[in-house]
Image 1: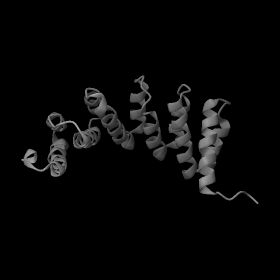
Image 2 (image 1 turned 180 degrees about the vertical axis):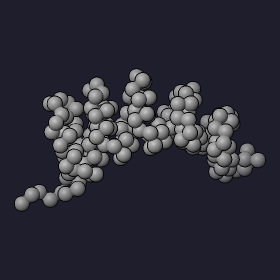
Image 3 (image 1 turned 90 degrees about the vertical axis):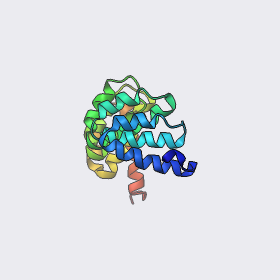
Image 4 (image 1 turned 120 degrees about the vertical axis):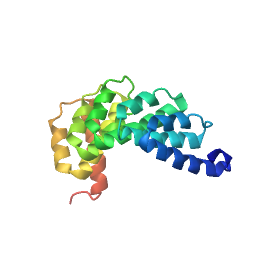
Length: 185
């Protein structure tokens, strides 16, 4: 039925049908979605399936996303990791610890920092110095500072001098300026 619709209507139809199937049988929905022609609609639908599937079985979802073509893999993996880290960020972080790719480090750290910024900051700070780690740490401290500036400041002050501490200070300072842009009098 969905294939008989005009192009602009197909995406919505596929999304509804495959989204419903994904809620109860994500493997079947994924298999059906992969029969669609490549493009924006297919990528969107794969993302919806990844999000739904990851809320119940994140590791299985990530095994599936790893099999996708490179154009679809990054987006669906990010969606699955975001879904997982929304509810179980420490587990998503442990999964990333087993991967050599740091592409999604910032995503997981950011999601974790909304729930437990200190644990997220400790995890990110323990990573090797890299642009991905630095960006993740900056954002983690920005989030933490907007939630609890005193705790974030105390954490930064206890860190040994390192590139990680410099990034944490940058994140803290950026958030502090946005929270209270007026200089002290």
